[in-house]
Image (cartoon, rainbow, N blue to C red; front, side):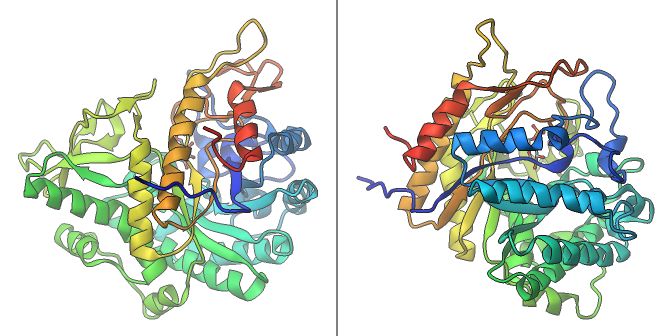
Length: 464
Ligand code: BG6
């Protein structure tokens, strides 16, 4: 019975990347080191060369234009602009993004800039990172430079990528010692203050500027209709997802998350004036990174809830007193064991819209796979086309439900280094001819999904 509404005119069909995963040139032209540059896995790619976008920028933007992209969501490396995080400005870094933005604008591609995507300057990390309030000041200084320099051409800004992932999966962002949960929630609060100050500044400095957060949001399902599972799902959704958007949009911690922090002893120190600044900062839209839903049951509270899942130190089975991850038998998995839940995207978008009533931009969603360059010189990735087709359809259904969706930027425009699985896990519409350790010739090769997406964009949506 559902009547499908068309994607709105001017819909921002785009694609995403992040600086440290795509640029390479990790210490060129004055760039300082970030926490990500310490990552040196033995068998898989690190971030030092990545997709060498730094040296292929014009070629890459030309491909974006050829695919028909209306928007490109990328991040600026804080360490290219301020190598120490808050000291001298690096003109060459400023220049690189000036050229990238000019190039995008020349093709009519809307730049959507993430200010900070997991790559905290190492110098700031060494001085306490987000546990220290000095990092708030450094971020504000950095934000001012960005708005001043690029605000004439960049109208869409995202403050912090996946703040909630940085708090819930802290390993990759904290080389050395993993902070305690109490410290993490302090980091989290400091990030809220920093993002709020940047939001206020953006509105003051960028004419017609629009700014918002970009958390990783996903609906949480209860395993059964057993009310105890429903409470567990609600609680985990509030702690994992709503906490971040409630503070950013409504300017307050929600009671479920706050009580959770109190009970666990994680409440952050909130300085005088923090909540006023946070309340004053009003995002214009919400960036949504969506990959898949999670399903939970009530915690067992027998000492086994807090264990790593599949030996992966990043992903816990659950949390004592809160939830326990459960299997969802209705969903398929990717080659990398990530769940595929396109309908869950509709559920998620509806929940977010109901709670915040702000326009949304999908800033990430996509399929990581072991793509192969075949003898015909092509990359056949029907699985990615199928994945995106289903998700686009659900996005359209969400629009038909009344959700205000302004654009869709799949992850990722081009193959890049995944956060934990190197180069073997590819997401791009464009293949990069390199392996984990063998850099080959870095040639850019359009995958089948490139041509398919080109058609989608041309038709402003799916044709069947
Ligand atoms: C998001 C991040 O969490 O997921 C990206 O913002 C990341 O940086 C993407 O690459 C996919 O995750 P992964 O671990 O497969 O690279």
